[in-house]
Length: 112
Length: 112
Image (cartoon, rainbow over all chains, first blue to last red; front, side, top):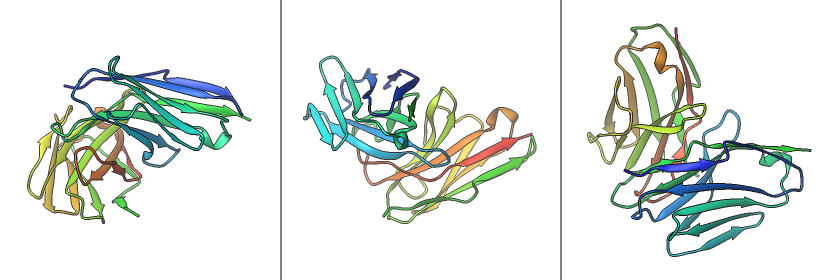
């Protein structure tokens, strides 16, 4: 089955700096890669996603890049703010599996 | 907005008790999922369901069962709760295998 590895497990940055979280996946059939943000006391919520026919996608301060050849994708957050502090999960899925495999999560702390 | 609700935010049970965790979604989604979340282990899939009365085992089904009698409701059952089932339980729903997963707020279960 699919295996998703996520690094780092914890990340601390100063407000205004950039943050990068990386994930690798094993199943070449995976073609949908969402990123979820989980704030304290809440369930994860989608913040951005990318499909395998696209190499990069941007939404304001958040961007995701995908390298299908190397089987890795990354989340980039620029100009970080304290409210970006949360746990971030990457995931990979394909239509045949009908389910997503999640990374172990990254706890991001943005220091004011 | 899609809403996924879970019957309890916090639950305390004794070893050996039968425990029911309920999840309801209001967007007519076909697919529903139960995960458990433990520090450093990410989101692990327990069971999922593609349709009423259908269920599929996830990665860690041992000690759990599920029930889906109505499309909007997916129940997780711990037949005989054990201390190693103390965890955060998250329910999610989605329309298709590759679409965004919508999560509930989670139920934090403590088994004494």
